[in-house]
Amino acid sequence: MKIVVTGATGNVGGAVVRALAADDRVTEIVGLARRLPDAGVPKTTYAVADVGEDDLEPHFAGADVVVHTAWLFQPTHSPTVTWQANAVGSVRVFEAAARAGVGALVHTSSVGAYSPAPGRTVDESWPTHSQPHAAYGREKAYAERALDTLEAAHPDLRVVRMRPCFILQRSSASAQKRLMAGPFVPTALVRPGRLPVVPWPRGMVLQTMHTDDVAEAFRLVSLDERAHGAYNVAAGPVIDAETFGRVMDAKVVPVPDVLTRSALSALWHLHVVPAEPALFDLLRSLPLLDASRLRSLGWSPRVPADEALREVLHGMADHAGGSSPSQAPDSPSTRADEVRTGVGEASSPPE
Picture (cartoon, rainbow, N blue to C red):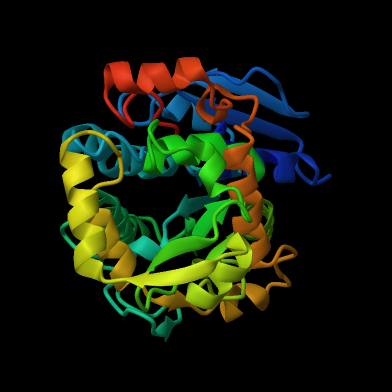
């Protein structure tokens, strides 16, 4: 079986490649990325390709499955750049896969695609219109509508939509810090046990999980012909103030949303942090995910959500990273490059 993975060097894509390579049913993997990795994976051939611009159909020729994970989180100050890569790029992947006659398409959607339902647990039938303010949610929702059109035009194509919560691992720690926190946050302070008191937006709850568990879910749906439609991907426990306090080994101080958003907005406009304030609004509107449908395929997460969060926080403090350019370890040179080119713009790896 031949499988093509876009965004094959990112947090999700790299783990999906490794999970597929470990399966005897997979004979060939083509990993597409904007930059080639420093280390290879068995059965895998890498090629440079930008989903927003390059001809993808030749890469998809003869593929049984295309797994689309490529996604740009930054630069949030240049929304046309992320729109071209994410919205337009996804449509180009979908159309190229259909033209190439692949058997199945697995797309990385997100909890961020769901319409607002703060704190409510939802299954895959909940609407996916997101919110118009944050580029991330807007682009994920657009891709969902593009998949609706694709499925109507190509009923023989098996389409799978994966909707995971926040995806974390040690080797993505530096990249995720660059994407969300920027170069000015002291990494030593994020290590659990370092601070006696930590802030937490009042009443906020969210879900996190380990990248390896997400990759295993992608492997299952890629190879199981019964898999079709949408699947929520999430692990427990839910991360709330109490759980966050245990992870950080600190007392949690609730912070009103107005203070959190005002501070984030000021820092974003000053290019001090790369996470846009609209992303906080999206975060506050997210539902919680019921992953029962995915579990019916035999999937079960092995790493608890709080352990995944603890792992990535230690990784940030340790400047941990991966072997690909997009997941490179944090260093004084990468932080200087972020400042020089604009926070969040120097290193904008796919998810």
